[in-house]
Length: 305
Image (cartoon, rainbow, N blue to C red; front, side):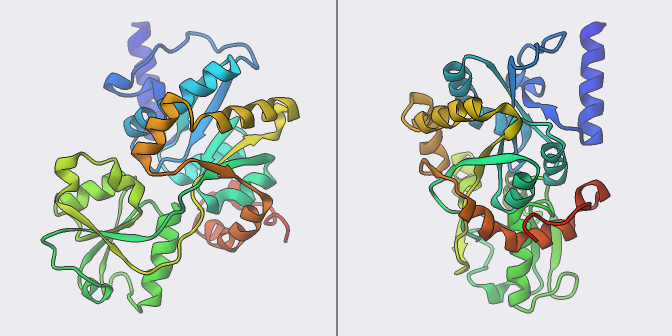
């Protein structure tokens, strides 16, 4: 009965959109959940933006979690949320010790006390993903189509809407807009014919099963590339601990698990994250605040303004 009760709590948490530990969810991803929390300082909460489904996030980031746990000699638990807004709110409420975040959240995270450490070397690029038999070859072919975007606070959604505006395409008039909970769900919707085109990036495409991926193709829209995901640690951990986390991250790409991780994801390793990345990301902050629905997140002035 105790185990059944625990699952009801987890299901309720997921339904309500709370941040949740991915180790507690789904089939082969299930791991032991402690009956009582570990003492303070004995667990690091690694929050990862929900750009993939929960099982996919856990599966792809398990090597990172294992590496950090081994090098730092502490338990590391991976957390995420139902969508990007809930992820951001949990991070701003210091629900995570370490975060892997899209670049457009950087100013708000730094304002909340996070310290940028590293970002992936390979930049993001905006792509159109279509079925090979779709007949879509160029942006002009998007008129009258069903266009899919990830959830509204993801960077690809914000950039995708801006890019569609530059083409003078309006949702509901020139195309039908569809929103998916994650990049993977969006690509599967294209594969299933539920939407005609996905506006997303290359990394999710690489993680698809080969039999799904071979029916899809990526079209370059000529959009400028932009910085990739950034890893940050919260200042409450203290300078010494943040230094240990930074050093552990820097050794991850050359570890066996790190080599597998970067080979499969196409992220290309790490480069240092700097305050210049934060300054460049400030141009996205007004859009982030406009898309947020929570007054808790909107309160306060943007950092540096």
